[in-house]
Image (cartoon, rainbow, N blue to C red; front, side):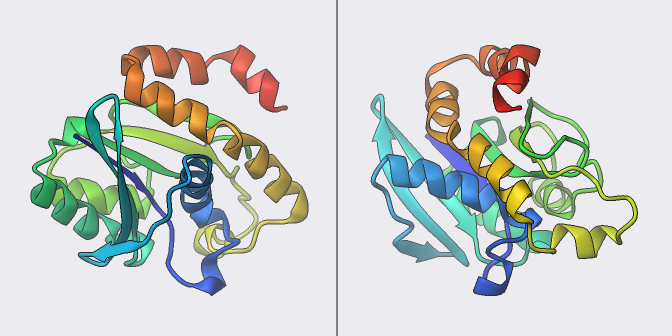
Length: 193
């Protein structure tokens, strides 16, 4: 059993913000699989499906980004899922807009959602898909990440979202090292440019 959790902020006012890149990515995957986030539990919207005889839970925490780890912890506990079977999808300031960076473990890199996950599950050893939103060093970091994306940025983010189905299906069928090699490669980045 696996938990795939996308990070974002709930509510219409945050829908088109940079911080909600994870929500948009998992929404695209769900749309491609004809799934809807029609269930609610532990302050999270979720859906489940079977893939290769394994139950998969897709989750969008409905607490604000900096408290999303509290929701994820409840799902891990309820479904008895280990952190190594957790995939988190989130925005990343240190990656160019519209590019992906996959990691198996590591620090939160200052991302408050990842910090809260690590505080709640007591480990940084979980898989992540980081969606680049670049870093505008001239704007306050908080204002930037909760600011609405421009049309140009949205086009780049939508171009990476078209790989949501392929990437998550690869995650569900391949060794994660192979998935990282595929999506972190320079050739893959060139496809997105």
